[in-house]
Image: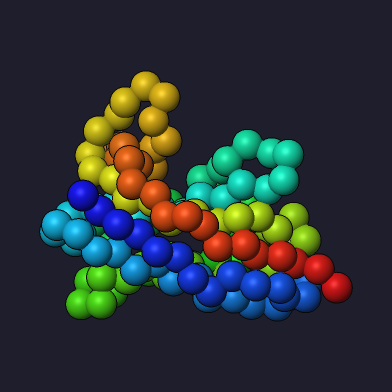
Length: 132
């Protein structure tokens, strides 16, 4: 089973930057796609960005394209979300999730190109607040 721990959230002014980290542990964590999701107060959870397990293919939500960059360091079993030019509407709890290929009804999914990943494993989240 995959365990995920996020860090790096905090309070930042509009236009500022943050780097979120997600440390993975557990059996063969390299086999899992990693996704970042967020949930703002009173809103549904949304997918922000995903990265595949091996070839580095990525997905970005339209709302963050050009501002957020996802990456992963297999040697450190860590995934990152670099966020720049942050806006108040980016305020949310950010969750890291891990998944394997598949598509299950009711299960959050990462879609990277033509590939679907069931995101079954979740961290507890880190709060990002963008405010002046």
